[in-house]
Amino acid sequence: MEFNQQNNKILFVVTSFPSVTETFIINQIADLIDRGFQVTVFAYNKNKIDIQHKIYKDYQLEKCTFFHFKNEKSIIKIVFYWLSFFFEHLFKINYKLILSCFNPFQFSTGVSKIKALYDLPIFMLNQHFDIIHCHFGFNGKKISKLSSLGIIKHSKLVLSFHGSDLTPSRIQEYKTLYKPIFECFNAYTINTLFLKEIVLKINPKLKNLFILPVGFKEEYLKSYLNSPKNEQLFPVIFIGRFIELKGPLQAIKIVESLYLKGIKNCCLHMVGDGELKEELQSYVRQNKLEKIVFFHGQMGQEDVFKLLASSAVFLLPGITDLESGRAETQGLVIQEAQYLKVPVVVSDVGGIKYGLLNNSSGFLINSTDIPTFAAKIEQLYFDKELRKTVGENGHYFVKENYTSKKLGDQLIKIYAGL
Image: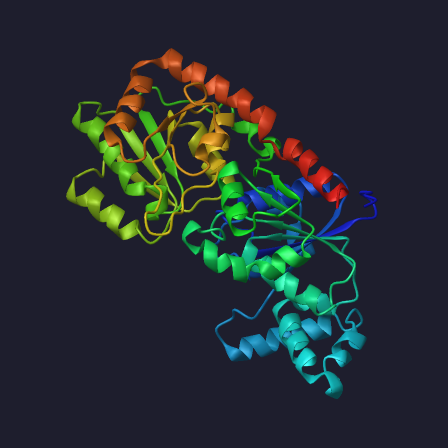
């Protein structure tokens, strides 16, 4: 495939945009724009939380983003937005395609086309995309439907799996569910070897499968490198959704054990939200930990970086879910912490181990071993030189392997090989 930045148009198909918990997508898009590509984003959901990443504003991404309206709860709103879409793009709509949906001699095909176009209305417009890059398997399935109906004909298709779309307990189900994807997509990416092993259990003969980790945009982290540390406190930070998989309760118990050992100036910052929030807050109240555990809720990327950079240790005691087999597949925040020279103490589950240098840029601990987690943080507490050395090692490791620019070079090679 001839690949020239000035002539190639790329469509990203995502679920939510800009997502607070999926910053890797916006980082990838920004890098492609930096390289001169014309990027359009189609998203099913607009982030309704009043948090916008600086990258989203700086790159004016709202101007190149189409948001679907089918998830509006009111039928009146759906009709309103549907009509607004038609009037806004009145002279861009592919009327020939629309009319083909009502061919009485191809009724079943027409109905399928109508359903598929309603699901992805951006394809009703007269525009061509050289590459369609889908994030998450369930979105790729929708694109494969358009391809099978002949609506997508000449675009090259790339799909990125991320983990929530590759639950190990559903492997047998995926063999049928993802079969249309494997029949029409040209390339696939996964972020770690952990996910590669799952994909190959679904389709052992799959070709053009690439390990491409998710990365951070260095320019947006660099300014936080010299953030001042509070020498009076020893702040540990947890960043992630408050779900069992991430181990937020374990994080609280680990810091609690340090407090009970007499390390009174150790505190824990909990950044995130989720289904376990009330349970976590209740545990903190019942055990009188309000003075050492602080809940910050969801935060914008810049506020997260500021708090992370001022922390002494990043903690992620995630687990492997026994029922589903799911575990953290990479955890970009682990690499962001290392870039900011914050030692990481994390569980040895899923794909986490591929994103750090164990005993050099961070530490891998058995997910159920709270005493060892606490002991490692205690060691870092008393050994300032160790913290500094581990922080420096982490910075150079991720700078060489996880910046959007480095990973963007790999993505371009994948595009060029289609």
